[in-house]
Amino acid sequence: MKKMMKAAVINEHSKDLEIKEVPIPELDYGEILVKTEAAGVCHTDLHAKIGDWPVKPNLPLIPGHESVGIVEKVADGVKTIKVGDRVGNAWLHSACGECEYCLSGRETLCHDQQNSGYSVDGGYAEYFKVPAAFVGKIPDSVSSEEIAPILCAGVTTYKALKVSGAKPGDWVAVFGIGGLGHLAVQYAKAMAFNVIAVDIHDDKLKLAKELGADKTVNSANVDPVKFMQDEVGGVQASISVAVAKKPFEQAYYSLKRGGTLVAVALPNEDMALPIFDTVLDAKTVTGSIVGTRQDLQEAIDFAGQGKVKARISVEPLENINDIFDRMEKGTIDGRIVMSVD
Image (cartoon, rainbow, N blue to C red):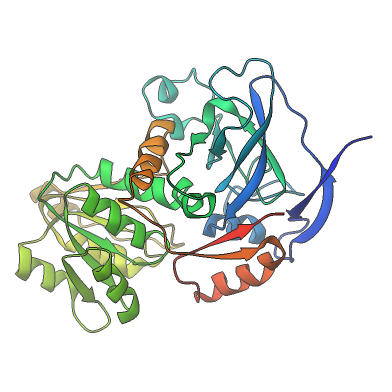
């Protein structure tokens, strides 16, 4: 008889998740079974529930790709992880390891990748399984609740800053100081950038200032493009984590010559790109999707050293539907992490 566990399950798109008993997953070669201690809630999980992305997940599905816990069992072929280790899963559940993207250190572009909590079951459950080669190793210096958002929001913003090409001392703008943006500000300061935080809410800008932002702009009252061009001659990099077209456009025009706009958020809109200005000013527009295993471990290590810390609130797994309601309304500050017991 199969052993059972509690999990939050999407049975039907746009319907409430069901807290129910499901079988504990059985391991295949190279996989580990993790007893969940904390599960972060990401906006992507809400998209999995709603089913509004072009590629929809197969249902039923257990979401979650920011889960942390203790390894309880390892399968044959596992060499680097042992029972008792504390690890976390991430959006990149696995990749083929053989394609041009995997072989060139761009495994997040692999066509055959699997994604935790979207194409395969994730960590909104008492246990989750994952290939040992794709987990992040968690240092003892941080709690499971604190580190959970780093597994997605953290690595995503860290990678965006890495690909921006900015150097220590350069000016970098972060558009949108929410769950991702408040981490982007901290990573940018840890990487020795000068930071301008942009949002339409004064309370979020106050938080950005507390986290080290050198300048802040309320774009509801002040034109951020004029501000940045006047104050610093334009920024070397703009990181757009605001889910709307307008901040993306502002982020582009805030760049100095030779600057880079890194697109992270996924608004369901198109953005007009001025070809003449892009060519003449040698600007770059690039997308950045989560991070590789190396990026993940680097992002975790920053948090382990105390240089980056997510603002979190902890709630029980049973609150997931209320959490999603608040997420849709945009009333969540920082990140929510769920306790699973």
